[in-house]
Structure formats: structure tokens, C-alpha cells
Image (tube, rainbow, N blue to C red):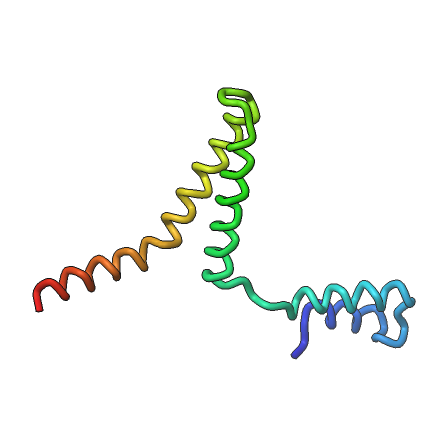
Length: 103
């Protein structure tokens, strides 16, 4: 599988012509390009962890302080994002519950 980095290396005269530092950079960039994709499930887990971290920080913050206001804004943003990520699941669960009641 050829990458854009391989095209750049070819234009520079090939892998053998690279300096040691360039080889190191090439390897690092290649690992990034071939890295694992982030899934929706990974994002849901990350968002939930961020919500918990913000809630913990908010508990230890003085009420109505500038830090408290900022934390509340961040918390609200993550809660909205979480609701967006979970909405298809919640819609499915709601429909399943509706039909279970009809059976």
C-alpha cells in the first residue's frame, strides 16, 4: 500500500537516500497514517471519562467562581455531545420498548 509519504520519499531519491533523522520521521509518520481508526464507541468512552473528570473538578471548585463557570460550560458541551452520540441507541431502545408493550 503506497502512501503520500512514499511518494515524497520517491521524489527525494528513495528510502536509501534519506538521512537517519529523516528515516525516523518517516517511520513515525507512517505509524500515524497506518494507526487504528477512532470508533464511535471509543468516542463515547472518551466523552464519558471527560464528563466524570469535569464533575470531579467541579465538586472541588468554589461555587460561582470563574473556574466553576468554565467547568460548567465544558460539562454542558460534553453532555450535549454524549446525548448526540447516544441518541440512535436511545431511539432504538424506545422503539423496542414500544413494540414489546404491543406484543
